[in-house]
Length: 441
Image (cartoon, rainbow, N blue to C red; front, side, top):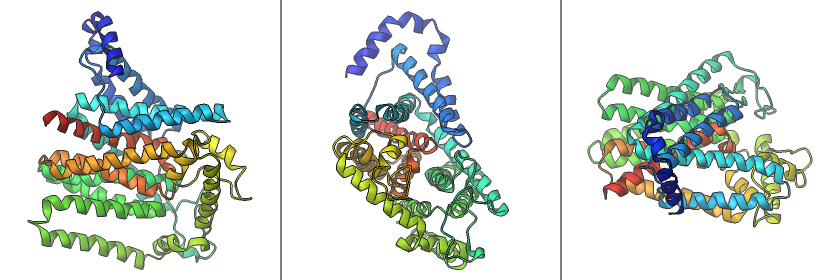
C-alpha cells in the first residue's frame, strides 16, 4: 500500500527521534484524552471549537504514523467506499462554481473523515479503549438527558417557529427541550440523543455481562430518562429513529435470549410497545406531535419539507454528475435559484438527497456502498461472534449508525459536528472489531 511505503520511509528516517522521545513512545496516552474531549465538548461548544479538538486528534495521529515503526495503515472493505466517497467530494469541489464556499464544506468533510481514520488507527492499537469511547458517548448522552429532563419542567419558550400550533389548543402544545448543544435547536438535540442512546442502552447489557448490577441499574434509569427526553424534544424523526433502535436491539439480542428466555423476551417487547402506545394515547401534547407525522400537507413543517424536497430534486437533475459542491453555505446560495418564494432552506432535509445534490450521484452511490457494506459485515460479526462483550460493542455501534441514517431521511442534522464525531467514532469501533476478527481468523 502506497501510504505504508511513505510511513515506512519516514519512520526509518525518524527512528532516532522516536527512540529518544518519551512523548512519541507514549503518544497514544495523549491521543485518547483528545478523542474524549472532542466528544465531551460537543455538548456545549460551537462547531469551530469542536473541530479544533478533532484536528488535534488528527495531528497527533499523523505524528504517530510518521514516527512509530509499528504503525501502518489497514483498510477494511467498507473503508474503500469511504475513500472513494472522499475522492468524489474532492472532484465535486474542483467542479463547483462556488469554489470558495465549497472549500469550507470540503474542509469540514476532511476533518470528519480524518478524525475517523485517526480513531480507527488508535483503537486498532488499543482495543481495550473501546469501552472508554462508548462510555464517553453514554455519559455525554446521559448528561444531556438530565438537562432535557429539567428543561421539560420549566417549559422553555421556542427560540424560533419549531412546530405548527395553528390547529392546537394551548394545552396541547409541546414545550420542546433543546439541551445545551449549539445552536440551540430541538431537532439537533433529538438527533444527538438518538445517536447516543444506543450507547446508554448498551451499557446496561455491558454492566450485566460484567455482573456490575448496581451500575446496570443506574444505566437502566438513564435509559428511561433518555426515552423521556427524546419524547420531550418533539423531534418526530427522533421518535421514528427511537422505534428503530428498540426494534433492532430486540432482533439482534434474540441471538442470546430467544431460546432460553422466550417468554421473558416477549414480555419485555410487549411492555415497551404498551408503554409507547400508552404515552402516545394519553399524553395530549405528545399524541398531537406524533400524529402530525402523518398530517402531510396539513402540517406546515411537513409542507415546508415537501417544497424543499421538490426544489432539491430539481437542483440534482441539473447537477447530477458532480453536484454543486459540498457545504450548507454552498447549498443555500444555489438553492435560492430553485426555491419557492418564502421557503428558504439551509439544507435538503434528507441526507441522501443532500449528498446527491452536493457531490453528485456517484458520491451518493459510494456513501450508500459504505453504509450497506459496513452493515452487512457488522451483522455477520454479531451473529458469528461468541464474545459477548464484543457483540455488545458492535451492536451499540451499528444500531446507532442505523438510527442516524434513518433519521436522516427527514433531516440533515447528521452533518452537524456533534453527530459527525459521534457517528465516526461508532464506525471506528466497528472497523476495529472487524479488523480484530480478521487477525484472529
